Length: 411
Image (cartoon, rainbow, N blue to C red):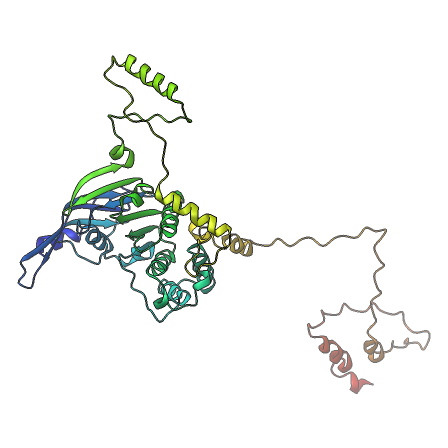
């Protein structure tokens, strides 16, 4: 890599203010041992992935899709050009927590089972134990692996291993999900399920980058797409912009008889001066995928057993942008206002219990002094106000027993 390229890549690319990924004139050239150009994988690629969209990166094998993804992830450094993810350099560690990545080949530990595999990846993101366990249960159920979660990954078929790879890409609930050939090795059931999941994630506000060479898989999912060939961008736009044919019109109706079809053709030719008419008349045909899924659904309703992955359950709750325990936490942190004690009415209130006299104080109290003239004893003087009693219950009793200093000598 040239010094000029290094200075360029240190500055994030500039695009839309809220763009998730921005690539500007991105180029990657692989060199041999003698630093000679061996292969130009990506050449002057400019693209932008916007928030909350499913973006398709299409092209045949060797067109530069995986290389582009690795530069977006910071796994490869571009030879020239600029790339930014969430407005920062791909090498910035802070953005890694917001990204989920499914590589083209799933590299899994064969001696771990499915649950242990997801536990491992969840711990890398430092996810709390309770949240971790709940997410693992939801993902295994969603991908149809709950019944095989304790089998070693080495015993899984390629399609089942692919499902575990998708689960590990979703375990951290990423804001930006990168899927490189996600349907490789999956049967039609798994393929349909992954496409439905991608569509659902897009509806829930996730940003998804989908890379594939299977055009039918991408066509059903993406909002915008880029087609690569030879490392260069050949086309870009929405599916409607790229796929709509401007020289044909399709009419669809209920089943028509021959006379009605002939009348429609006569009207079209009359309106166009005879230059146009019906090109093709036929009955719509379902796709092979629809037929396959219909047969599988009938077998499932008949409760036919299978040892492979099942159809799977609903989308995991944490992927639906639902707060996890937020309401419970807020209710625990809310300050509690003490309720006032109920006041009993005078008619129903019980009489207060009389104060118990301090018997020890009465026993040790000083007797009244006799009158000076030997007559009747002097009128009793009002007792002075006693100081507040100590807080300890035993100290008041001890003080009453001891009395004032010097009283014992006067007696």
